[in-house]
Image 1 (cartoon, one colour):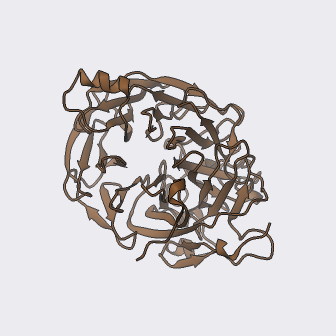
Image 2: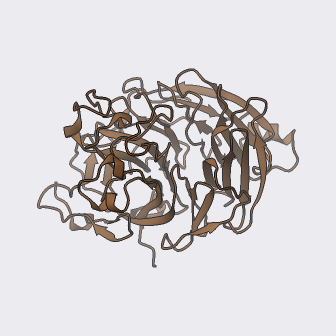
Image 3: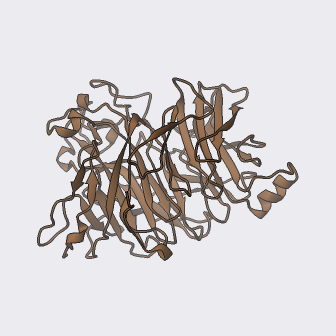
Length: 484
């Protein structure tokens, strides 16, 4: 296929220096660019004109989450710190939340897209979670603790928000007369499964909830992000052997369960899957398949039924992936990020356990490098969708294996648990995509061609966002770069 010179995207590396994608040859895409169909194989479709901008948050930020307020300020979790940038990532500042502690676990940040309320959720030990919130772009905060009850576990915390449904609002109205504009949800693993609670007062307290999913397989009590649709359906994704979603249509008063993806399965150990919903409440569930590619199942009836034939989102050349995250704008317009490797020559060679490597990042050999990828589709609901993928990081995010099970990490020159459990992707109100990730290969690791796993043990917080390209909201059209 013929490639237009405009495909040269501005990609910036770990030090913020601008890196331009290679000049395209007469035919074929530049290195690190892919246009594929539902099977991960190339299709003869013109590539989207996408460019991405890099920002170094300047703090360690494994397990980051990101949110953007209507003012355009970006918020990023760097462990116990909430970082803010209001100048498009040129600089970052620490916004003092109500909870100040030198060490916390499983931090989570959420920006309510309706009210602009920013939530900073910090787990203190395994007994208590502090939930703080700000309504003025992080300048002032309020907060309360949420205790886990008699069972001393309160792990893998997540918070989200979404519209009230008629059923949920009616039930809530009987319990409180001061109902916040949106329903706020708080979920965590309590050792025996997933527990979720609903707040009627904007996260100040959680009046209703309980166990929504049992611990039925390894890591079954762990779960992905909370996602809500415009129609009020709320989704939670448990980490189980068969891709599964748990959903509620009455703001968390009752829950149902659906499975999918049996045709492609999942590996073990595995990481969180995630659901995105578009402006018409269509749902898109993404996960890592047993062959270590990224797969998707779609629902066009608010989660009641799901496709049983899975769609591959990642290119066939990307033979190992982890940390998939997704968001959606209008119907069919989605963006996904993940860490991936194209080191196909390492397949079937001996890994760190001395067995043939099958692509599982948990067991990757020392000669495997992982990069950050972003995949777009503007027709993801079509029978034959097209996926546009860019390898956005010019140097590796991790060299060697990535620990996917905290009880079974490989200690080679320092634990490969450095990236922890997830990255994050969200869009702003214009449909511009933002990705938060932790970079494990920084400084000399990033600049050397001979870096080893021992060199790749960083966890620097970083962001890529769409500089120019199509918005995920069709009415917005093409987005231009910010004027700095």
